[in-house]
Image 1: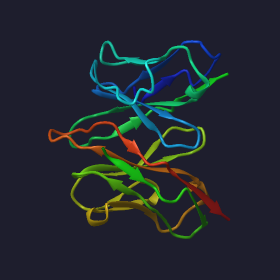
Image 2: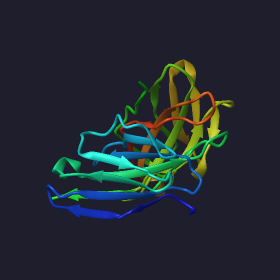
Image 3: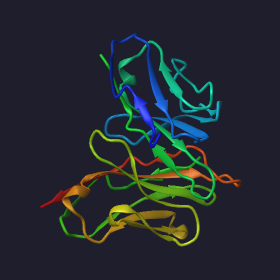
Image 4: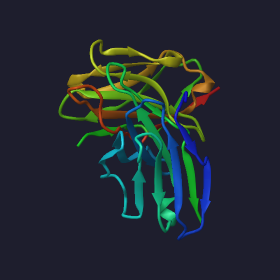
Length: 114
Length: 117
């Protein structure tokens, strides 16, 4: 597609519920990144994929967070047993390679845990 | 590990006045540097980026930024702001790979720009 697509746009979850957030990157983009943006803060790195390989997951805040990209395209960020502190906007970005390297961000999923 | 400091949490500028948003980074080699803008409820829009070459880079919406290696800075400037420039501005750095490409971005905490009429 023309841009990075994220769904759902908004998600309200009850505490303890599992959620799955989807990211559809720009076609052909090898690298895919997930970020968490708390209210009033800058985005914080969560994890990074190159094709289907998860090369860096150092930013995942706990073992309740899990990301996958099984076919090297669409990615899913899953949060198990959601807690109130998980409330944030989750941003996905994909990037091309080479001389015109850059990151294109989706509009994000705003997760509210009640 | 790389880090980014945006010293100004809020900046208020009169419409038509000039603007400079400060950004300092910490990184041991030549970084990729970026400025993004975020309006309320929106995603991040790239204003400009620096990889190498000319240290003064031009971006969209009349913005420019200058890379100063000696000061580890990448300040964003605009000669005359418009009310529509009111938004949150983020500076970010990424680690370059020798073969091209980079890893994830490290963002500053952002500067909230307020435009006075």
